[in-house]
Amino acid sequence: MSTKTRLKTSAMIASLAAEGQATTSAPFGHALVEAAAANNRIVGMTADLGKYTDLQVFAQAYPERYYQMGMAEQLLMSAGAGMAREGFIPFVTTYGVFASRRAYDFICLAIAEEKLNVKIVCALPGLTTGYGPSHQATEDMAIFRGMPNLTIVDPCDAVDIEQATHAMAAHDGPVYLRLLRGMVPRVLDRFPDYRFEIGRARRLMDGEDALIISSGLMTMRAIEAADALAERGIRVGVLHSPTIKPLDARTILDEIKRDPQRPVYVAENHSVIGGLGESVASLLMNSGVHPEFHQIGLPDEFLDAGALPTLHDRYGISTQAMVKTLASRISLTHAS
Amino acid sequence: MHLAATTAIAPADISALRQRAYRIRRHALRMGEVQGQGYVGQALGIADVLAVSYFRAMNLRADDPEWEERDRFLLSIGHYAIALYAALIEAGVISESEVENYGSDDSMLPMSGMAAYTPGMEITGGSLGHGLGIGVGMALGLKRKRSRSRIFNLLSDGELNEGSTWEAAASAAHWKLDNIIAIVDVNDQQADDKSSSVLGYEPIADKWTAFGWTALRVDGNDLSALVDAFDTAQGPADGKPRVIICDTLMGCGVPLLENRDKTHFIRVDEDEWRVALEQLDDTYANQPSAEGSDHP
Image (spheres, rainbow over the protein chains, first blue to last red):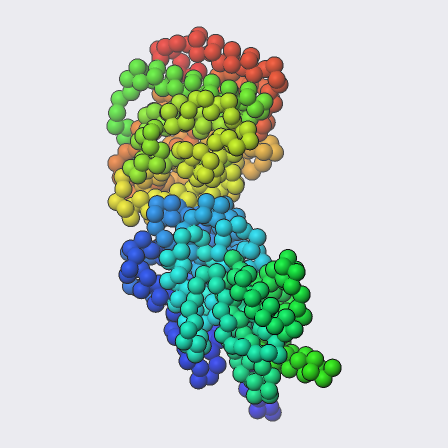
């Protein structure tokens, strides 16, 4: 009989935190409560996923500013547009799959076309549930990137989410945020100068052997991978680009041009089609900058169900998988 | 329906509304003539509803279309823009000279209604099934602000095909949004065919009632009946949203178009625009008073 721990399919509330990792509970919900204390135009709306998007924290603090709209995402988005038309700042929540696949037309025409001040906050981005394709928003950024006027934010951790929530509240216009919810790791505390700003990428680590440009939880992975590779004498830089659109073209180009010989790895918790990787690729092509270029992301497939650690390994977005990918390529380069 | 009409209707009021409806029809035909096309069948059909909405029911300021205390008119059905422009011209929100620019490049009157282009156009319509949901959000926002303004949302029978309309209908009743008055234009015509053939819509009133609305159904080209319905629908707050289902005749007021085979986009040949305008003038010249039929 095997003594190996049997990994189970993660339920909706699977945490991304490693054992012993510092976490914050419901960073979005608590940050929204803070923002709402300072701005009485903020309201919360959800489509039967208040508990699962951490909006419940807001609902408990401000029950009279909370709107349960029922399991009706098309209504959620159009009613959010209506609220914004009347001068409020609605934070509307559901899962990324439902916002992007089911409610697209309503976000596009009712919200984005009119530049309305609706903040669309969606849980389960990319591969953050093992529940299968019905809940895995692996192509949400690809769907939304073509929508004019919509800002797209893919935060790394609890620090990013807290700061992004305040930034979204202060920003005039529609925003889509890929939410990590529940017990969310805190990793950006390690970089005291770090500040989230819409439209800004930040260098977190420097290294001459390779550059990782990443967003979302893949920035956590990139930092862990860079630490692990440093122990083997491989120096990897990490540029965190939490705003996918508008992309911080200047910072990304400056960082790459600083050392054009460094291979570039773009890492994202999203399909390799249509997300950060292709955004950076088109930026580089349009700018005539041609470094060695690789993507680390999810394949163009409907993904398996299963336990998240298994799936992250299987699809190459676990820290170990990244270390393996980078170490083999970089040592090959060094050897040649 | 349980609401009682509050105001008696004076014949002079009907006569004045009749003149408004006539001029709305005329503005719409003129725009059609300028562009050589347009959804004039729908515009002629809905003109009486717009006359009662804009000149009896709603609170507006022609010189301040964004006046905070105005009633909001949401045109879900963007292709009816030609009709709403005609009403906004008649209301003095848009200059009548804009008729000459209808549908032209850089015009404030594009063929499909969009909020950014036109004063008094509250939302961007055209992708059907959006208006009532936006109306729910605005009505919730108005209640938050303790505003007495109301939402009027013009939908079509075809738009009832869209599931999102019914998401919004359920929500309006759930939130007790008695500050919404929906208007459904039933002309039994949508893009491919008669609406009743594309996707049967009856019993419309029973459906809205079952969703928790107060539903009224009237002849949408009978001004007296419309006034009665709109007055009734504006009755005291009772926690229920209201819908006025209006059966209308496409092309109403212009025999040439009333009698033409009905399609979503009624063909009008180049030499027929003048004929249509003359027929409209005749219709109103022949029935000048409110004493006879209310039909144009």
